Length: 235
Image (cartoon, rainbow, N blue to C red):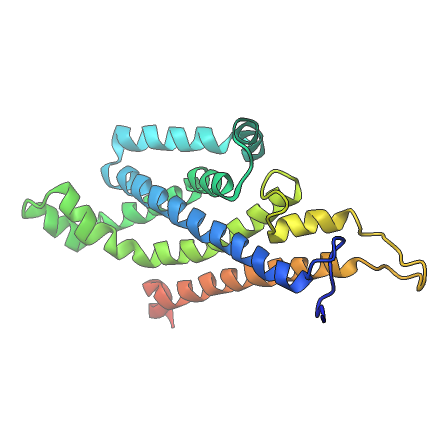
């Protein structure tokens, strides 16, 4: 049997584990991004639309949570629940929506003062109707861009946490956990050739993480250029 990218320390096909680990990492990133988008858009829309004391309470909560290092929260969660893909996904989703809420709040501040929103309010439309039919639909470009960028950031976060031993645990493969395992064999030298014999364990997942995160950031930047009406007017 040919191992196109070599084998790991247990003789497992590195290419197969990279594909399996990519599936795990991407699934966690997409599901966590969906959770954080749902929470961030909802909370940010409420804060931006109603303002006043509602905005003050929500922003106080967000600023308080942001001030707590996420690594400490994850250590507490890992002590209570055994680390697993589900636990990590829920953690990243439930504690990753604060930045989205801030962006959404600022966008809703802008949208709620536009003419069509004021016209809907003047004819007696309810707040819920205005938010669902005017505010949120006109914030979709921002939501799409944030989601694309958030997926890339979550892939990087999951990889970092798994590398530190706080995320995906063996034998389940993810790109971060593969990097963590490869780190133990980084300076392993083949006595026959005198060369490093385990660099392929480190290089391949590192390249995949870098290219995937870069791709999602470029997609987000391209979507921003394509969907932002202000940039369209300038061009």
